[in-house]
Length: 121
Image (cartoon, rainbow, N blue to C red; front, side, top):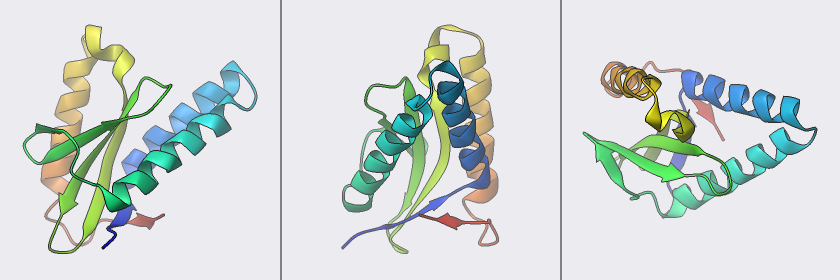
């Protein structure tokens, strides 16, 4: 049975920032990023149990781009919630710790909340 996917509004902002960045680098590159992201999200619908990184957050890297999808899985509700789409290029910088803290905050605050605004794909 396929899982449903919901994207946290802040993850949508992450995605839009990445699309805009790549589109500014080269026309059409943002669209290519979006297509690869969508392919990985479709993959998650059928196989959501990728690497568990911390607490209950799973991660799936994007092919050809230095980004990773961070998501939680609710088996009972058959729901995958994308919490963030983060640039892994920052792994060697101080920004990585800030990104991790921000992601953990998102998960703790929103995972238990039924009032989270969901964007269904």
